Image (cartoon, rainbow, N blue to C red):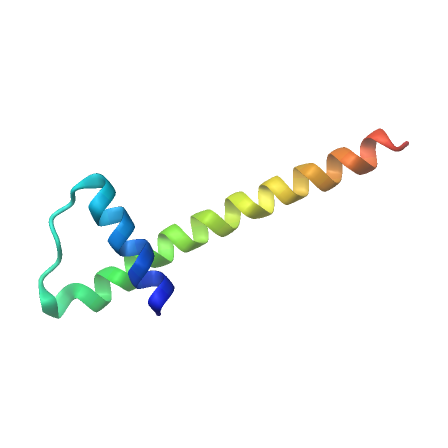
Length: 60
């Protein structure tokens, strides 16, 4: 949960979005942090796929 809180803090500070109310903070962390975490994992997966695919296709 700490990584979601950290990602949410970075996102809110970077884009200057209004902070959620204290009772909505946990929900905002799950939604915003979850989307950011999924996005970062998707990018890492795509980069890994293309790097590995590029290595195998040039070896043929």
